[in-house]
Length: 373
Image (cartoon, rainbow, N blue to C red; front, side):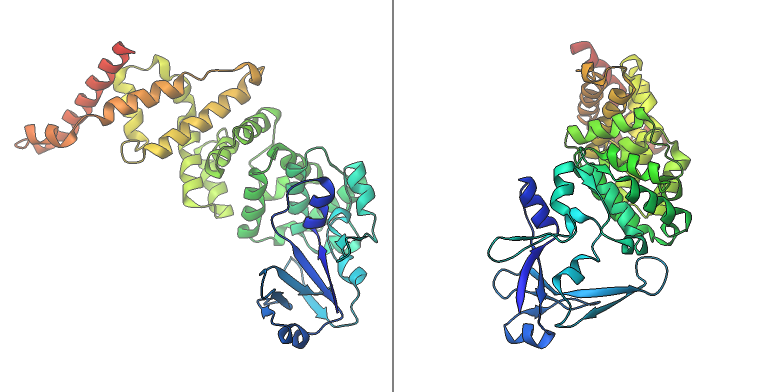
């Protein structure tokens, strides 16, 4: 019985990148052997165990066989005679199909180290084509490692998978999981470029053409280390409200991502003209965005709008200031300082006039604040 560190941990160590999680493969063992050594079983589809002290995952070496379309259609086989090479060959990319033994030596039967050096994403075997999630993973890796390129043979294989309808078998939750993770990587535009090049983008996000401007927008959000909600809103800002709603529904995006993207798509042009808005129009914008109850979401919308403005700029790096954002935040601060309860009390006998009176008080507050600034 021997164990090896496998996959991303080995890859990242060789790249000199930090490693947060380590996965292990155990060769020559049975589930009974693992339990006897105190490991705790957690795997549902195949035997995976948690180390009794480190709580890292240890999976028995396994092979797999495709039995149905999509990424659920696999049968797994584990036994003590499954070799490390048998386990590694089922992995997606050569750079993820390496292992490190206890003595530090690298087991690299499929050329992962050479592809790391050449900055190439290359599939390990034809089994890659059996799992459409791997297309999304390659695209996500491209966003994490933007100086890597997809090997021509791998891109051709992914294109064939798309044409065969494998991508259509992906469930929305898994598509969102991979897209959202890619959006949080160093350069999200690379993810969309890879998906576009193999034809998958047109199947999973037909509303998005991944033009250069939109890609600058989403990369700017990444450079600013914005949260997922802002990055998704920046990506979708130019789609239009109906299309954003359709995308969010189809992908089952979280409510906070959906709501911010819808607001950004609806309001980014108005926000762009914020410096020319009169106080009344500014307060109406704040009310329409529910900024008094959800000021943080409004602030995030302004961040997404700023990213959009940078993407539209001919020289994005030269757009140092986006005065619309501090201008609207000051207006919100002034309007929120209005005591709506006191205003309502003054109109207790005319309840139907209370909303109008509160609005007027907020307009007056915003006008006063603009004269001071």
